[in-house]
Image (tube, one colour):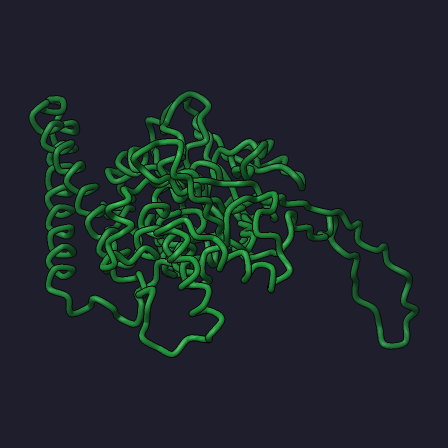
Length: 427
């Protein structure tokens, strides 16, 4: 199929942030077994789906037992993919203590933070923050965690938060990140060597603003755990907050309304891509309300891909939830090849039309008028802002006998290039 072949040769790049780490795990028997299991499950899926299609084409209708078997295999595929993701994440986690010599100031910070977490003694942290010309109990509340813990949390979020993994991420020290952008392209033209150069119109500049909002988690611990010297509290804290932060970020980057949280890319005003204008997100309609079209359902996927300009397609990814991905797994091209293909390694994503598929559960299910599939270069299209500093406030009073750790970070996000992301609308 010509269109399929053109796309296949255009994009085989792995998802940014999900690349294999120097071949890590290539010789890991558990990873190899998981990949082999995933491959077997997909072969069984194809065989069962082919049988279902043969039943439909034979005008006898789909056998309910075949449909049930296909659903079970589809669930097994999702479970196998989840195991591969977990293995990839575990291998990607660097140790908080590498054994290398660290600066004296960092060692002092770690010791003071450890004493604060275990016993509530904050004098050491107050002294350190006074040295750094910051208040010990500023408006943010709490105390800054050691830099290595903050780096570890952000590293884990890059693996857990699907949109963060493919977007541009910038660290800032203030509360707002502002950038100028040209709403119109600069005027240019060709002239002869000695011909006059008429003055061109200057581009119209506008300003984009991305405020950093507060995200919090509140892990709890018993005093017995805190008194146990064998427990690495840095690792414990990173483990406790990573999932909570990642879940909230994943939702906000997709559907957030921009009020007290980042603005998700589905919250911007949309417009039919044929009439696209800057400041809005273009969509391609399926032509069928709440469903793929009955005839040639794969054509709308090609339309979505080619709605994106060639310069953006080089690093583009599909974004959808697992239920939408499950529906697309059954699609074939004109030559009978499945458009969805399983990942080739634990650290790689599945592909659709040769482009990586990013699974984001915050994406909506297929419904009337839903924007259930996004396609674009999110590196250029979406911006994530991290304000430096992860703060912890120890609270031994609110939930006795447990000690709560009110942990906050400031994060923002929004679209920075509206032409880099296109949506598929089921309408």
